[in-house]
Image (cartoon, rainbow over all chains, first blue to last red; front, side, top):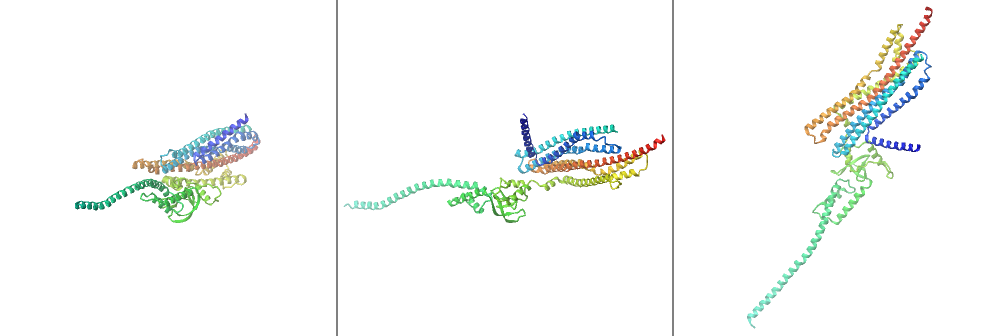
Length: 175
Length: 404
């Protein structure tokens, strides 16, 4: 049962990899910046979730009582808020950039289409289809990745706000 | 004997003497006409057969003619072309030797089209100078000399170096291929259409031509982009230095005037009023000043990030106007007439996006940096305020008990 499950997962991953490779090949050169940006975005998002779900609760439980003077507390609060909201702006910007990169891919794909039309004429639809598929695939990729980023960024922001409120209430209760 | 009979007999004899050779001549003439007719029929038959053969040869030669004209021939190309011309000519009787030559020549071409070989041949450069070069011949498809692709030009029967070479990867392959050992398998680009695709490929505009296609709006976007990138660089260096100085300030006990935190704390120290309200106001004012200094040029970056795609859109619209004017003037029959405006439209859009995307990213990074520094300033100012108030409360606290 277990071995069968792993086998299925591996086969599925292979399919996915093949599919992604095809997608990149069809999407043309703009796929690379798209991939780079989305990789960066997902690294940041994972780091954020790790911090918010793992590091921050542990910190709140352990190291609050050691704060004594009010100046210490102010500095600590500011640092925690900084850590909570770190990268959030970048995540938002990156998820805004992804659809724009998709749009860039659209336009470069259309430029390529027109180049090919100029060279070979518009008689062969297969030639035109290559540029158009480039345009559409990059747009789709940009939109999908960007929408994920927006949704996850919203969730992260909400969690950061909750964390901040929790921290402030805790510090008040420690005073 | 009757003399009359004698005379008649004599006449008869005489006549018979005449008549026999005449009859003989007539009969021989008849015979001569009969015999050549038979031969001629044979001849004609043979000729008819040969005619079909000659026609086939002529047809074959005519079929081969374009091939021979569009091929960089191995061996003596002029004599081979002359041979084909002669064989294709309808008044020429092909001889067996010529047919043998044709066969040899075809065989040679077939053989050459399956080999990779070095040939010495005159090559015309784009500047017009001709020079004898070592040409790498990849079958009948592709020719490479000095790591550059050549194309065969049938009009002048010469190899011509392509005025613009295809992309870097293909050129690198060509260069490496000429240098690798012949026993090793090495990758190289082959043009199966015999140079035509390569010639089309280099018609795709390069970066400079693309930028030129963008027109005025394109240049405007590029100037704006260049200016903004330089500004981003300056702001980045400036903010990094300020951050470093603030960290130094945090570690050192004395106040320095070269960083925002030092300046705020100095103003705070100079404030002698004991009033809480006045202290708050001082800190607030100092913070606002320093924040303003930190955030210099950042709104401009945001503006450019918003404006660049709009400028691209402007280029799109002007390009489209150009396109429609071309259509109004010349009709929509020729797509090449419209392509100028369309490429302007698309290129400016690309330029606008390419400008805006990195600026958005840089703006976000710079604003993040700026806010971190601002928060740091605020925190430490608040901490200083809190310590001062604590001290005063402690002082008043120690002073108060005797009073009460």
